[in-house]
Length: 99
Image (cartoon, rainbow, N blue to C red; front, side, top):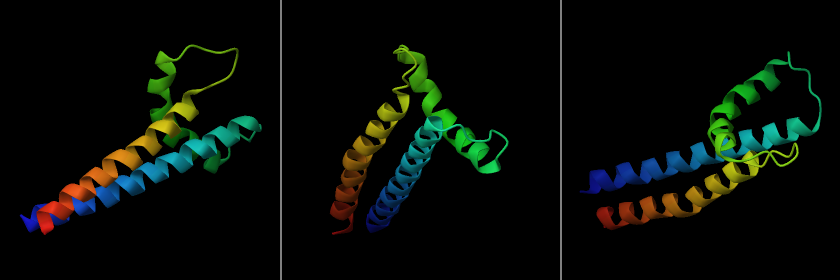
């Protein structure tokens, strides 16, 4: 069972890194929305392309509050919740399988 434990430990680390990357991308997208960047800039396009699949499903269910977009805040809260709940749970299960 130790192989499954090490697999879950690696999976927990991978999930943590993916969630933190998503968090930084959404924060960068929120900061970009405060300024008017050049839409032809490749970095701006990359940030928009990476963040839109995360933000669009949330935007479908949240009403518009007078031009204020709350979807980045909800995605950030969801990523932090999953990082605080899912990752330690996977690590605890992995530790019990390794020992």
